[in-house]
Image (cartoon, rainbow, N blue to C red; front, top):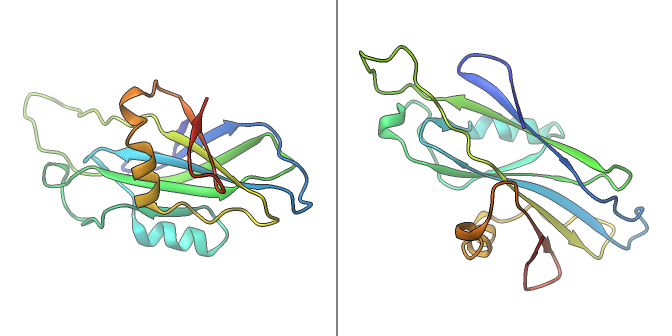
Amino acid sequence: RTLTKSGMHRDLITSTTHKRISPPTGRISCRLASIELLQDTIFVDQYEVEEIARFGGPSTMIYRAIDLEKPSFLSSQNIIITSTPVPWDSSSSNLSLPLHFRYQMPNPSESYSGITINPSIIVTMCAQSSRPPPSPDTNTVISLLMGYLPTLPQGHTIYFHHDSSSPSSS
C-alpha cells in the first residue's frame, strides 16, 4: 500500500497480486474489492468517488453518509468498499482510493498528530459468467465478514465465490 500526494488530500493505492483467471470465454470472471475501516480522522468524499467511477475508475461504496466539514472529534469511523473487475490477463491489480484527512482537536503540547490507516481486507469474488459479479453490497459484505474480523491476522485475504453461499478463506 502506498500513499501518494501530500497534505490533507491523498490517494491510497492498494496493489495486489493474484492468480490469473481463465481467459474471457464465458467460464469465469472476477471482481477485486478492498474493504477499509477508516478512523474518524479520515474520510472519503462521496461525490469525488462517484465522479471517478463515472469515468471508468473503481466503484466505491460508503457505508455511512458523512459530513465533510466535521472535525475528527465530532466524526465517526466508516467502512469503505472499493472494487474493480479483475483483468483476466494479469496477475496484479491496483485500487486507488482518494482520502481526506480531517482537522483534529488542537493540542498545545504537540506539534503534530498521527493518523492511522488500518490494513485493508482484500476480497475476490468470482462468478461463472462472461461478466464480473456486481459490486458487493456493503450490508452483505459486512454481515459475511463479521464472523471473520475478530480472528483475521493483518494482510489476510478472503475469497468469496459469488455463486456460493459459504465463504472460504486462505
